[in-house]
Image (cartoon, rainbow, N blue to C red):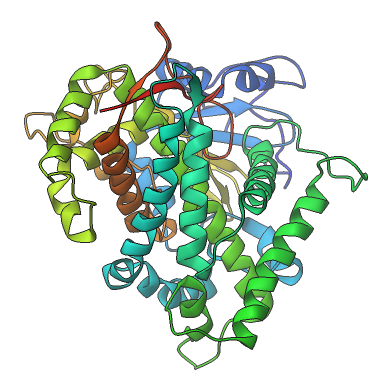
Length: 457
């Protein structure tokens, strides 16, 4: 396919940009859909740090060097955007949340929300989260010693979602309600993933008796709107995330509109639990098939003496954090997208307005220039100074720049708590010769789940 193919905004790509050729019209779309992780990695090896990916409708350019990643993600001049011209229509219909904002409005909202994810607030909710984690994980006793194979990825979702909802709304839902929320949230995530993976989205039609996007959106909007209305009618003293959002003010003293409040809460639900489910599942999967790091994790956790972990213990759980980081490194998303809003230059190539810039995180995280034996699970990369130094943007599990995930501190806290509580109680065993495979979901879950047999320690 010609490098001169027009983008949706009618601007031609620089024909000097290298890249795979692909098929007429379809380009490399079939190959990308079949394996978006290794196909992009192979193109990067063949074509370098800037290469075009011919697909229908878009000019897509991938960047694979940390310096270029930093230039795009840390840009503060408005050249690259996460949402582009869709920001205003989304704000008028759904409402504005941080992932869907740019510019000064984004910066004001970020300043407003940042305190609720700082250590002071994490200290307020840590005990609540640990309490819910503990209650849910102890239910796994029913599997222990039975020889039954359990999908631990699914079970982790049943642990993290109720804990996150308690931290957000100071409420507990029934197991039936939790299952409904989990299914609806995953449907919303699949819709977003369809755009990233260039695949077919879920059913967009409200056909009775079927799982469909409009119904899932309606249920999520109704659920979150109900939480907001209930809190307005019956304020409580507990300072949860909903309470903090209701109290938050812009610098001019104005509060969030109800629509923006609802949008922000739904975005936080999607980013606050489902992403932890995915990254922790990858971490546990690699620990199951790598006994030496797992044994070192048992030893570190045993130093707590069986005591339920608290926020103050996190600084002692350095190996747990390294195991989680290495799990996130190997997890890696195939494309973190930005839209070029103004003509730019990257790596010596002209990038016209309207070009989609993709950062293949999976590829960056496995680049031999920064990671020795990059496909091997080795948490010492994050603890041992003998490993080669690397640019900061060679490891970006939470993104980089202004859109760096605002909840990364909470994600680390939840991951360290979960690893501690699980490894204090259980041993996990995957089937012989089983290895983790990536699923093309928004948060990059495990394809086929995480099959384990559970036994008590």
